[in-house]
Image 1 (spheres, rainbow, N blue to C red):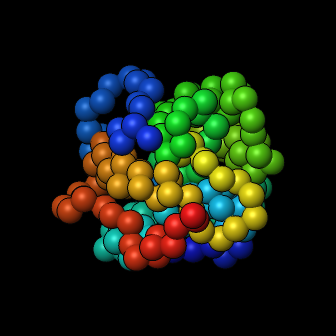
Image 2: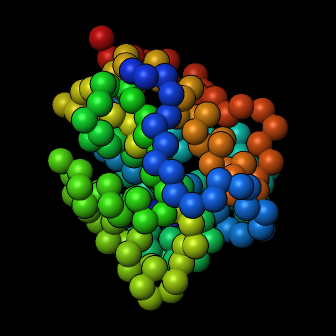
Length: 199
């Protein structure tokens, strides 16, 4: 199910380990949020990814995919009612373009605090997550999958390094969902939506 917030190169993922990696078997609500600006090339990778995920995950009624764009506090209701939140966004990782890194639970806040460069929406999303935890004790689990951008100037396509490493992004998403007890039979994959590459 896809909703907008207004509606109420390593080739491997760098994982920041936190706690047990055993699969959690529960039937909680999972919210997947793609954030970013589609008009700033790689800055919009999170939105591109979540749009591609929507039809691939529509069979599971526990999962809601949200195209959040650059919205922030409008997300609070979605975050506060979720048991687990998966955030997908471009992130400054001080790594080669296209590198994918995964942060879990308290490491998400630590990444936002230590990042050398933050966008306004990253700061706002951090505040939304903190507010939901303080006021509602939700979500119980949160994961950030960050992608190192190459180009963040005007443009509506993703750069070649980011596009080439999208399979790594989708593999990380599948692993996270399996860890949260979701049955993902086939490997998630980018759709033809990603055929355009900035040259």
